[in-house]
Image 1 (cartoon, rainbow, N blue to C red):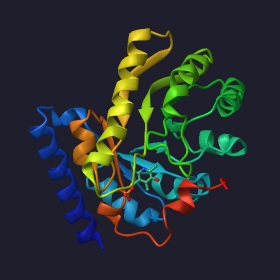
Image 2: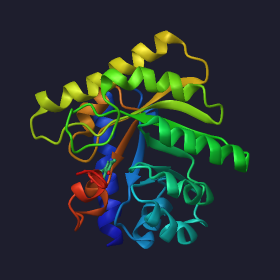
Image 3: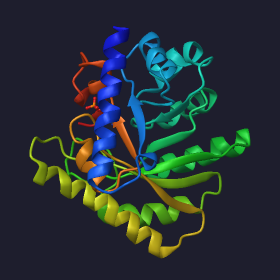
Length: 244
Ligand SMILES: *Cc1c(COP(=O)(O)O)cnc(C)c1O
């Protein structure tokens, strides 16, 4: 198990490096986030001890379950799943440093309230639904700028970038446009120079498409399966939750 994870990590890091070289980018510009849904704290520890330092969970319940076990190992924790407002308190308690999946104003307001109460701030990315699929969370690209402007007025929330899942497809010419949409939105928002908004981070690309994402400007790729192996639950269990 341990050697599998280390071997897989080597391959992923090599893939990231090669993609950076191919697109003339500095490999230091691209961070690896390990998507750890369904993965045990024990397995995650192996990767953290091997030098990785960024993980992302989809469910608050899993963040909570693994928190104590992972706490002694230095790392950073992002949240990449659907944000239920009644779970915000738990996320703050578990020292999640960035919510990559903020996609609606009412959740931002709830987050702001809680942050005020605890006298904290939180980094967020705005999640955009670039594949136009009903089943996926994220604000529609046409509504993204408006959402950024509104959230920017909430002083406890620090917008640092954008996130997208993209289309699940084997066809490159269908995946790439999703990433281009996110990159273009980033540029559009940068031009507006909105106070309290940074747009340095583009979180896009997963096990199957990280090379394309890096070519299109990803600064964070989120990889699960290619490091930890196949999951038992289908991704729809994580991505459609709460949706009809
Ligand atoms: C599961 C997940 C990933 C990683 O997907 P893999 O195909 O396993 O690499 C990335 N982003 C999000 C939001 C996820 O839920």
